[in-house]
Amino acid sequence: MRGKAKGFTLIEVLIAGSIMFIVLVMVTDSFLTARNSARHADNIIAMLQPLPLVKADIQQQLQQSPGQPATGQGTFGQVTFQWRAEKTAAAAPKPRFELESGTSTLFAERFYLYQVELTLAVADQQKILTYTELIWRQGPGVPQ
Image 1 (cartoon, rainbow, N blue to C red):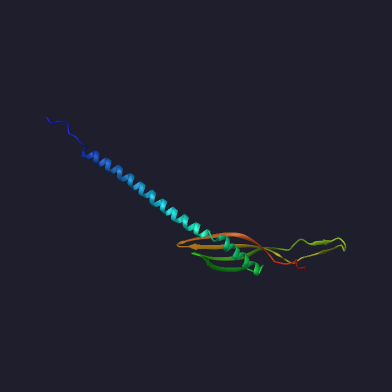
Image 2 (tube, rainbow, N blue to C red):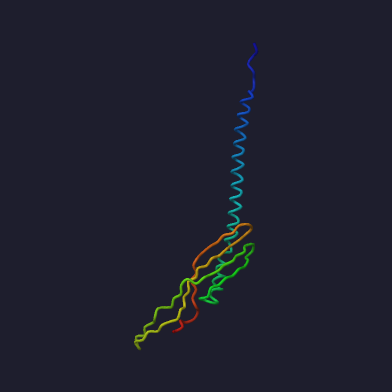
């Protein structure tokens, strides 16, 4: 009779190899997903960094012609943007009552509410943001 064999059988080696292969595939998939998520997050951060400057630019352009629809586009660093704004509401200041004369002063429209759609793009990603913006005509209220 033969003595007891030392080592692993072929089936044990195949099972161990299969388990190792499955673990390797899972780790690789997790790594690739994490890398893609990090790249996506970096692009979103890069896209949103100049947002305060873009909003200030939009406010300035809307302030120049209050009450009118407006569009624009531009570039800040590697971020390109396009926007359009539509007036959704307009209002005048409340009438002012003069106690001495007993009359009311009515004012023309001075406050404008816009719906702004802003499209930001960087690399191969694009994000559309929608928000409302309040603009008012500068200077004293203009009586009607």
